[in-house]
Amino acid sequence: MKLSTAITISVIILLVTFNNSSFGQTSEPDSDARTDTTQFIMHKSPMGAVLRSAIIPGWGQIYNESYWKAPIIWGALGVLGYFWVDNNNQYKHFRDLYVQSIDENNPNGNLRYYDQREFYRDQRDLTAVFIGLSYLINILDAYVDAHLYDFDVSAGTNSMTLSLRISF
Image (cartoon, rainbow, N blue to C red; front, side, top):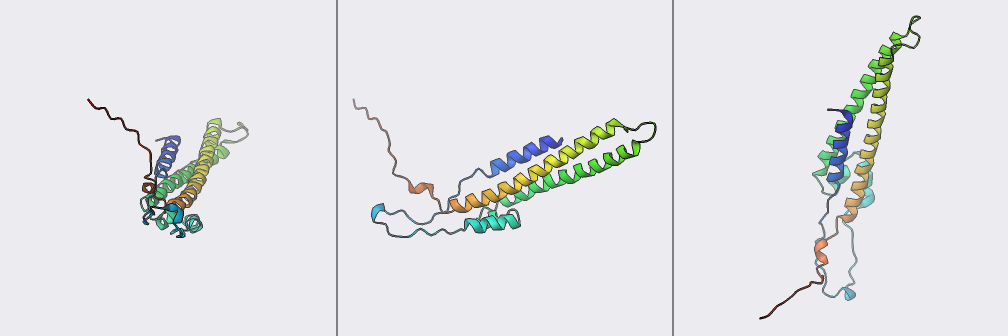
């Protein structure tokens, strides 16, 4: 599997993973919202989730009780880390071969080795960018998930309906 295909799959998995809704509010909505004097208290701290995810990727998701997201984050970062190490090793290998191919008869060296060296360096650097983006998406997801932890979509049941009745 090519690196670009694996990176594309990893990014798609991350995007699909973080596209969810959290249902966590447990209080019942009051019938008369104008006389409601209760104070809303958040159960999860967004900054606490951010700090946890910044220290250990996936910890913020565990804090937000989105347990299924943590292994996906670890897997994505593990795959990207593997590709970074592999590309770095290939880069070093072709760098050494290129340096060894330079001599008095061929001052430019073997250009195939040079092209391979540049290819693996570019792939290594691109993988590092994807690692950084995955890390930032992990932090952003923990922040948003903490904010939405108490959000309940079933509270807004006052919707208008259109009905049609035909009598014969």
